[in-house]
Image 1 (spheres, rainbow, N blue to C red):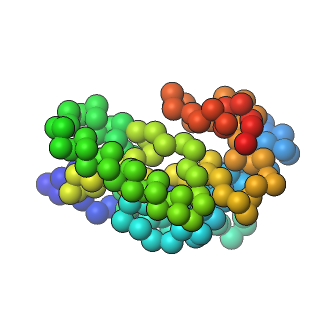
Image 2 (image 1 turned 180 degrees about the horizontal axis):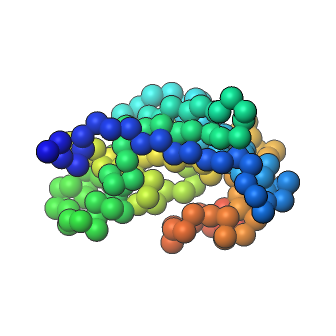
Length: 168
């Protein structure tokens, strides 16, 4: 059996033309999805940031994010399966702090750090992912990194206040 950290790819598909969305909601959703690509392109590669490949379908209706980690390796899922030693907790917290420090050195602010966006590595460390709601100066004039209401945010109990209240 290959074990929980076997190299397999996880591809997230985002439908960019959803039924039931207003034109404004559709445009904000498209920009949020593209924001993750822009943030990662700005930062480049780092051991503490989960590498993600981005692509768009030929017709422009779908956006894909491909990583070598699955949701099963998120801190939320792993923490439900087992407990961590003090050393492991320190390693994870240290790696998340290093990821944030790296992102901040490029003026990229994640704003959605949660157990769903932290992925446990085979060595017990962690990588940060999902920069959909990140903010950086090149996009300071756009309000697309905030949610119109909490229904627009993932069903996570972790939401940055500036996202929830629609205020940068």
